[in-house]
Image (cartoon, rainbow, N blue to C red; front, side, top):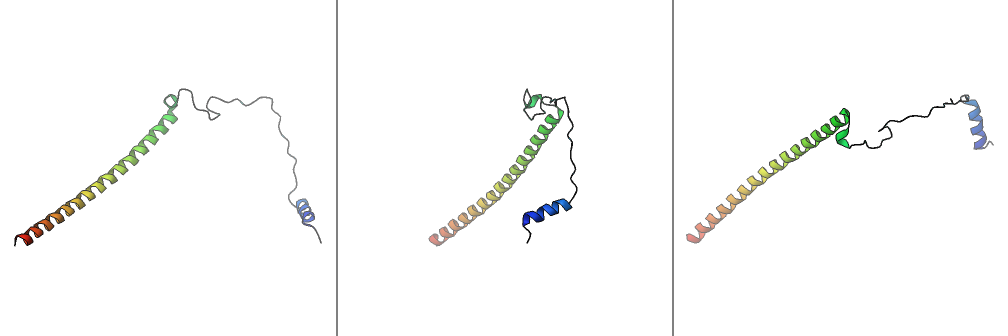
Length: 105
């Protein structure tokens, strides 16, 4: 029987032809500008280019919108709790008047 190694070698020989790759030889080294390496820019965020400033503005607007939505939800919940509190106060008042009527009669 054939070993798995022999089958693998035979399938490689039948498969796609092997091409030899040649590498080009260059003398010049790659030049990188400031910021190309992923390092933070000098001067911080305020010193960035137009794209950086626009990106920061978009992030700020997104955060502001998220905070507005959270605030609206909190206000809605506060109103619901106030209504519930009014219902409870009315219930307590009804019970006290009922209790007073029973004791006074």
